[in-house]
Structures are given as C-alpha cells and as structure tokens.
Length: 254
Ligand code: PGA
Image (cartoon, rainbow, N blue to C red; front, side):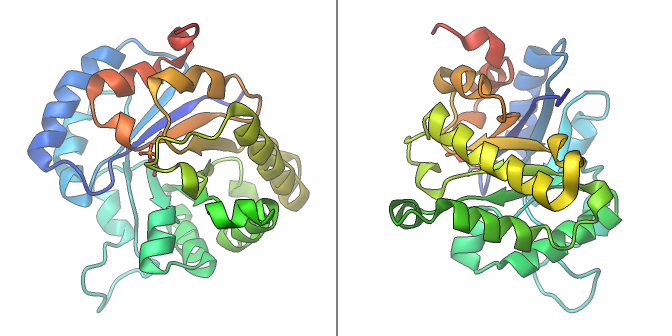
C-alpha cells in the first residue's frame, strides 16, 4: 500500500554535464521499473538540464533545499517558485548536513516544509540522531522533538503525502549502516509518533532509511515493515549502483 521510494541525494556533487551523463546511463536501466518511485536530487545548477532529460521519464526530480521565504533580499537563497520552474516533485529539507553545518532549526525546517506544500512540492523531511545522542539513550527523544518541530507547519491532511527520511547521523557517509533491527526500531517509533499526532493517516506516510545504503544492504533493510525506501548519498552517484538499489528486490541473497 506504500509505494517504495528510492531517492538519490547527490549533495554538492556533479556538474550539469555530469548529471546529464549519469541520466543517459541510468534511465535505460530503470525504463521498465514498476512499483518503485525513483527520485534524483542533484545540485540546483543541474535541475534545468535534468528536468529536460526527465521530461518523458518516470523518474522524479527533487531539490536538496529551499528558502523559507517567498522572495526578496536573501542573497544566495533559492525560492520555491524557482524550483517549480524545473518541475520538482520533491525537495529535501532538514538534512543533517543542513542542521549540523548550517545551523538549521526545526522551526526553519517546518517553515520550509509548509512553503513547499503550499506550492505543491512534496518535502522529504530528514530526522536522525547523532552518535552521542544514541549513546546517551536519547534517540527517541531527539526523533520526537525533530518530528514535532519539523512537521509543525504541515497541515494534517497533507501528512500522507510527505516523506520522512530517518538518517542516523553516525551512519551517513561512514559506511556504518544501521542494522535492519536498529533501523526498523526507529522507523516503528516514527510511525507511532505520526499516528499519535495525526491519526491513522500517518500509516500512509512513507519513511525512508538513509545512511550508507548500498546494493549489498538494501534488500535486508527493505524487508523491514516500516522501511518504505531509501535516501542514498554515495551509492547513488553511479548509474549501476543506484539502479541496483532501485531494483532492491533482486539484491536478496547476495
Ligand atoms: P550516504 O548519505 O548514503 O552517503 O551515507 C545519505 C544521505 O546523507 O542522505
């Protein structure tokens, strides 16, 4: 009932030319893929080229960030109407690199999510604990605070449409994937929180796992009942590797 969603988060990697080369190699590999939603989140500067290349493809485009303001004197920012020009279906907000390196707060993330929804772009809202927080047994407290704060601006009726990405900070770019048990425990907690706050519609919200997802571990992660997809950094940069993640069902037994 929840369609799996596999998203590539390229971060500050790939020029527009490199994006075009990736898509030329990747699209034929996923041409006939059904029942999995595929999302590519390239840098802003690649959105124009990518949107042209994806015009007749079933792959969706995402940005990696957006301003919480409509327009005005905000040097260096990108507004939601600018993203609409490139037919972005999704936009990532609250990635741990934005939270950690650029000081983004739950309040700001919630404003960004609301801004996106009011312009018919769906937010992929990232949450996740640091290693220190996990070791101090604060994982669930952190997730509860991030969820309630980051989703404060999301109208209840839109909750089924948004995507949550659970990304434990200690697993991002480290090669240390959460075990399926650890990931499922956090996903089940997030699901319970969604249902507690927004009722049964929280059952429809897709929750992605992110943090060193690769072809070798995606099958076991996707078997977990509350893991509905993946947000993939490093392993999404090569067409072959990301297409294997998209085809997660074929990776079992490897
Ligand atoms: P990773 O990044 O797959 O390279 O760990 C995931 C992310 O930060 O979204």
